[in-house]
Image (cartoon, rainbow, N blue to C red):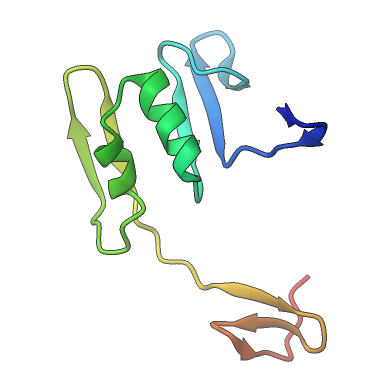
Length: 109
């Protein structure tokens, strides 16, 4: 997507599964799509909520650090929230990578 001549990167990906082609990446949301969101903006949340007819509160729930993994079945959609612990890696140009903000002299490839 381009906005004012600048390439805009979406923080969500759209996939569709089929028997013959497996799971393929799509550019537009369509019936049966799987939308994977990573750190979405408020605008992206609103777009996906409107296009998929999903309650905005359900999408925002996944951003809550206290939210637990769960599967929620609604009339028109199934919401799957997965909470996976991740060690944060921060790039430090002077000493390589840092874990949790602490310098680590073991460089990662």
